[in-house]
Image (cartoon, rainbow, N blue to C red; front, side, top):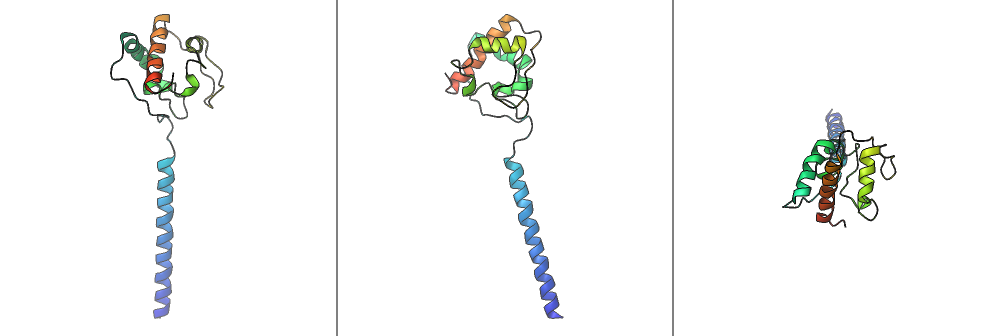
Length: 143
């Protein structure tokens, strides 16, 4: 009888240990998996934005942030970060941003799908948005 109780106790303890380890592994994996819409990169924001960049921040928040995230950090599963070496001025000049907003753009660097045109953004807004993005890029070592 005592042997049976020891065997049953040992099995119960083993099962509890396996359950605990499995739960911890699941929690750890979930902690590492970025959630849909989460920021893709960390962005350092300059302490002082000049007038053009400040206007650009306002226009960006109204027209771009819903997809490209706060401070152009991107949104996991939604749209890429614009504060990223892919968008450095030497690779994607200012006109690339203008054309993307005006005409949309086919997906080519990221797996998010095509970007549709952005309706209602003025030329002045676009210039300010680009000034804001470029200032964020410079602050984050992207020249």
